[in-house]
Length: 306
Length: 307
Image (tube, rainbow over all chains, first blue to last red; front, side, top):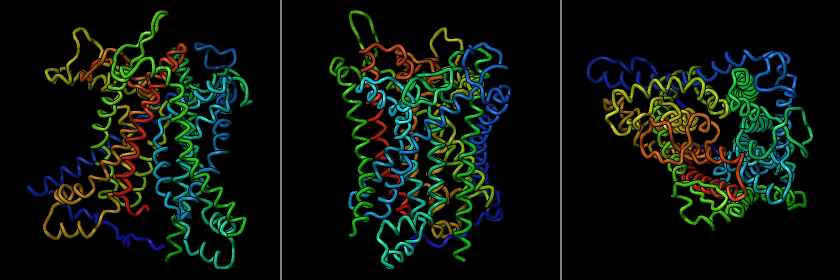
């Protein structure tokens, strides 16, 4: 399949085109400086969020804060004791459980979207895209209704189930884009050599799309690692460390933040900022590594075509 | 087809159909749990404005919350759209190479920020600032009903105005990325032609770029609207939820947001209330599902190169 896009020429962004003189120049100047100003407003909002989290969160940071759990800690305990160790472990546990199902399933949907000739394909794509807009609270309510239907106790596994529908569309979309980047010729060549479709996929397409699939995984993780509402609805809090997803409460970073903001004391707010910083660092690592991977990919691709 | 292939395609297509099943399951479970409340409350559930749970009777109605969600989402879109279009314009038509890439990455990072962090920032850092803006608006433009407040209102925090800004922060990246994608694939010949005819930057933007891309941008705005209506935690912190409906006084510290209402009532909900909250969730689900389906149809049509 050839790329239907016209060959890319760089936009002429030379400043000579935009002389801001005279009446004609005035409206151009308004456009350029107006858009710079509004964009600056967006970036200052972003920087304000980042700076607030980093400056206020570093006040809570210490080795103890990172590995201790919250047992025997009240909302007014001094910051020398207690931390988010249990919440980090809980978050990782739930997110990995959700990933274990969402990654293979999302990948399979992506394969279907890129390889199937079925007429249902566009419908599947539409419903997957619509799922991407699923409000997180609805996902929580959905799992809550399952819990109530099963008459089960809230536990970690249900939190993971509530994260899954939120993660699936992201993984499917990014994986689809990754698979689409693999030249169709590769697959056809494999088929021409007599490979069945599944071997063409596992031995030719998947290795070629490896970094893209990892990107899909990373962006999927980043999408759900900070989700709060579904977890508030489906798991019980826990002050201690609990790695059993089938029984008892489990602490996660978002619900930890939620709980400590609601408490409202100065030291509890500092703890919330500290946990936010930890969460921000996790999201940042996932995000930056996803970007580095796709950056490499594009560079390699453009080198190859030359 | 070999047996391996049949298995391979069998698995991938069942995964694809699972997407339908998932949406179906969400609908079925929510309807099943919401049914007792819908049956008991009738259609007034959607537009009424009483939420009373006592021993004798239970009245569950979410009118002000539903209205508030729409009001806040519209405010958010109103604030976010100009900023998003400007940012996309800057990235595609003004910034060069590395700077454009950096700006794109920063915008995408904003999209990745968890809403609980935006909420924490919103209530502790942004609210005092926005309160200043609100006081300014009220002082100088208070004669416009939009910026008026009730008698006796002293502090202008926890208002739909502030919630609208918080929502705007979260949907700016959504609208920006759709708009940026459409701008960057814009037909260069059209622009060059317009420039050759003597058009200025402004005329090219206003008469050439905007008319041809407005459809796709509308799709992006709808995606943002869907996200805004479902937003829960961040609004929960910055808004004073009230069943006393606030029609248009956006600076008044009372408003509604249906998703935040679910969160605020959920902890101490009685059995009947539980079903009512499920019904509220059903309302959000159906609303956002419809908005998203329409939005995606529009966006896909505006981005034919994605197929």
